[in-house]
Image (tube, rainbow, N blue to C red; front, side):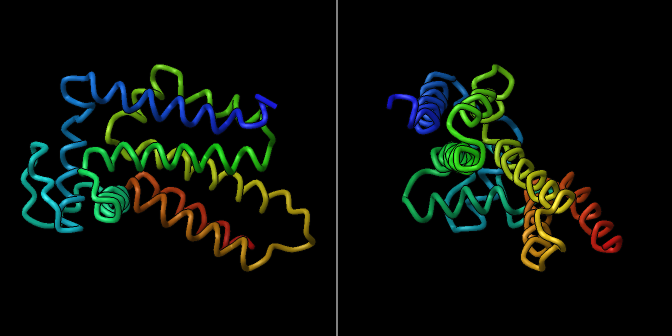
Length: 193
């Protein structure tokens, strides 16, 4: 019974760990890139993001729009500060990751997959206000959908699968410009099929 909700316990542990590390770090795990994300998030939703070190005068395309929009949306919807919302976005995506994989591969495998976030490098990535956490979670979903399309249980690929892959590819691009690779890969796949 105690292992039944292992991924939920792991998510709570990671979330508390992120919160504790953020509180006790003098810079609250805000890097120069983080300052840009928080500032852009403030511009997008009408909150003060300038207090984190970067003064935004409007939208600048230095970084893609999705991550600041997620931060700003959570801050606006909940009343949290942009900094707390940025940590919340990362925690939410880790929770979604664990929930999806718990349903797909079971409790024990999801625990092993989620425990990667406890490794030093990954824990640092998810604690900073960086888009890599969300990008990695969405990237895992992209690979799952590609696997479904490469080894279909059905006789033919459905439009639903194709649209799903397109939306995930575009979301990857809107999270990190490196995601443009996945949009190109999607386009090549569509041409091939």
